[in-house]
Length: 345
Image (cartoon, rainbow, N blue to C red; front, top):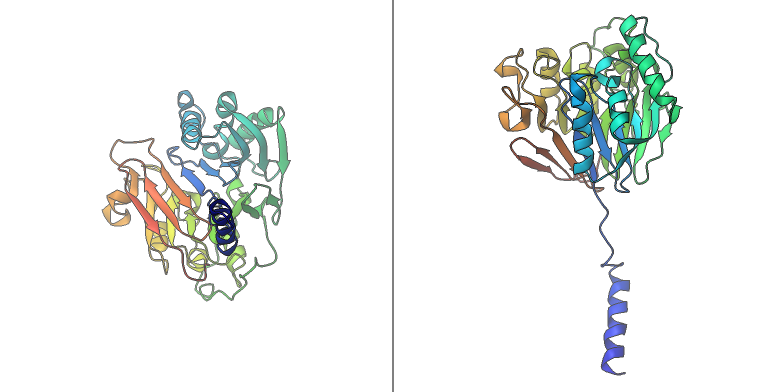
């Protein structure tokens, strides 16, 4: 055997033994929590580069929120948004649709079906949304459906007031926090109809329930926890206390929570305390310092993207399929890594 043949044969053998050591590592999942001043706009970019935008922020303000979404898309190096998911038809979630559609190509809209709230302003915002979706592809989904993004599992947990009926794989345990939970009032608004999703990438799990209110939250969590545990929790309803029932937050057992509050919207002391005290929570991050909540109900400054008169800064999450993820504050560049848990979630 000459030298060339020896080198080739040993290289092939090494690759075979190493299981393809030169194969490329999988791309990470990226999530941008965009500051839309107390609304929601969460951009998810999967390992395949397919994208999902959850909600579009407010209308008006000279296209402020749409421009911030476009800026996040450029940072993520995507030229279009494959799916825009509207959790519900309140102005701080659906209002930016028209301005965004003027600025960026959108592949398909996803929602829970027609508006279900008896409110003039919500009917107006839904009518504006209907005009936009008439010009592109559109689907309505139900609890239990999936959204086909390559490399991710996107499961619809709640939609139009309904919720999944069977526990997800690995879930279904009796929830010990339900017994002490007071019965919440019925909510007739679009909040209770929020389209909530669980996004899974390998062992990493992220939940976003829109503005789902307590009565509907408890249907997911009591008496059995239908969802299981998560790594990342978007604090529901911007941190208002009409949401974030202890029985669901504590049962989800998030490692990290991110609150998409505004300076004077959301971030209520009661909800903040519930999340802050959740067993196993490592950190709570906020898009804004909650000016009306007091220092004792705000997290540390390095975990807050916008303080004082600052705005427009975002929080970015990068997750690996083994469950490791990092969270970064764009304002001060503070970054923290959360190592994968042995055995996952």
